[in-house]
View 1 (cartoon, rainbow, N blue to C red):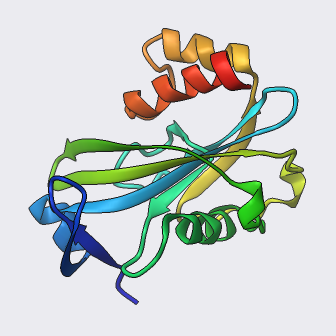
View 2 (cartoon, helix red, strand yellow):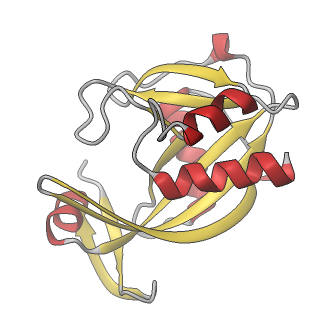
Length: 178
């Protein structure tokens, strides 16, 4: 089934249009995405390594979980779905804390990604031996210490995706809230 997204205008308002993933990325149409960091009580952050066959940032460490919001779907619903698809674990609405919304524009080759992002935090200890990764999306998962992530961010995002806004926001989360 082809993924379809609600198209937004530059102010983040629904236009009433629905477009496929391919149309959104080819034409640079604004659409919604969600991402979350899972952090345990010891301030370790669970990250996923993108699979080698991903078009954007293959083999790079990325947010714990993320994805697009389907047409007619709420962000929290999308996040719960993505956690199940990518990591094979169930989370509930009360596990999720909404942090902020942001925009991002990224263009690589023929993909123009214009996102209205919703960022969430999940503070929970997840036993990674229970995770069943979606091989098409994820090649590995790992807990990173707060110190290691802050060092990677300071070292020009060493081994991390080029989502600088996301990593700088994680830095603030680790410094202020966790």
